[in-house]
Every structure is written in structure tokens, then in C-alpha cells.
Image (cartoon, rainbow, N blue to C red; front, side, top):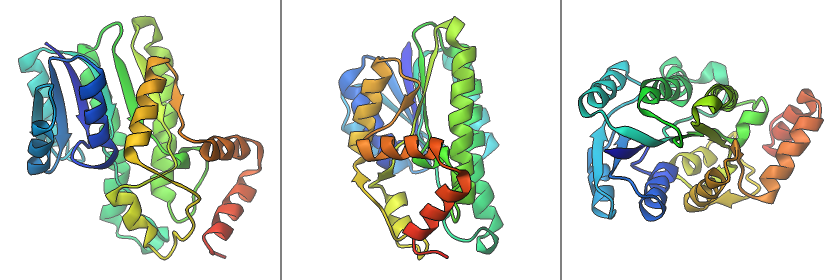
Length: 253
């Protein structure tokens, strides 16, 4: 049995990846992972490919062990792993609840790492891993300190294991979008520290571009000229200047 595994599938970019894989790829099953079972079941009803809903909280190690046990039992071939789970906490680092900060770091980076490690024994030549990074991965982001740092980890990690897995024929790509119209990002916009957004992208647009870039075997997927231009500038400008520009855009001293 050849499968795709997609985390964060109950909403936003994860859900759009499920739709894209259902339309464009040919798998025996798509395993979808998120906390909200009812949303996964609704998603399954809209797909032509058989979908297996797996209600799991990937910030909890027990869920990773549950996923590992299921793989050992089913022995599938994983043709595609998309790690789209994630969350963020915006605002002054010292004012935010520690539990929420650690949950963000765990889900964005450690859970993603665990999913890759547990899935790799079931991946073969031609398999792919897609990890959700962010435009925040390219620079330190004040008032998004943990979120930005976790996404920098995802980008670095993806590039490193991509090089390691090249000889096995397993491709790794990191998706680094700008602002996406999702429940998470639109909630963040109402935070008093996030006032300026240059351009919103739809999660369907991001998923479509990522699938196109995956077919081209790109190591990084970036949607939109404004985001690409920003990435180029960030690489050229001093870090302190980049952070100052970000703060001025948000009206922060």
C-alpha cells in the first residue's frame, strides 16, 4: 500500500495540501493527521482517494508513538510526507505564557523532526518530504521570536536532511510562504504587534505552488514576487537593519 501522510490537515494549508494531493497524485490512501477528528472526517468525505483520519496531537510524544506503531502494523510505503502542522505566539517574548511558547516550538520543529525520523524507514527512491517553513525563516523576527526561530530550524533541517537523503533518492523541500489567509494568521493580525501585512496569499495558492515546485525537485518553495524580493534583500542587508525595518513596519519602537 502506497500512501501520503499529511499533518495539520484539518484546516488551512494542510487541508489544501490534502485536496491538491487528492487531485494530482495517485495513492492508495491519504493519512490525515490533526487534533479535530470531525474536521478530518468532513475532509475525507470530499476526497476521491480513500482518506484515513488520525486524530492526534503531535505536540504530545504519545501521538508520535501511536503513529509509529500504526506504521509498524500496516507496513505501508510512504510516497509523500507533508508536515503542515504548526502554531505561533506573537507579542513580547517575556509577556507570553511559557507553556504556549514551548508548545509552538515543539509542534513547529520537534514534532516535524519526529515525523520525518519515524516515517523515513517507510520511504523509498522517489519519495518526498515537504516541510512547512515560513518567510520568517530567513531572518530574526522580533515579537515572533519563537515562531521565527522554529521556522529557521525547519529550513536548515530540511536542507540538511535533503542533502543526506539525496543518495537514497528521497527528495526534501521546505515551503516558505508569506502571509497566508488562515485561522492562525488572521488571528495573529489582530494582535497589537502585527499591524502591517504587505500581501495575503490563499492557502490553496501556496499548496498549488508547492506541488508545482515539488515536481521540479526544488529544495525551497516560495510563492510570489514580493516574498522572493524580500528573501533576496534579507540575505544582503545587515541583520540589525532587517529587524529595524520590520519593527518600523509594525509601528514598534
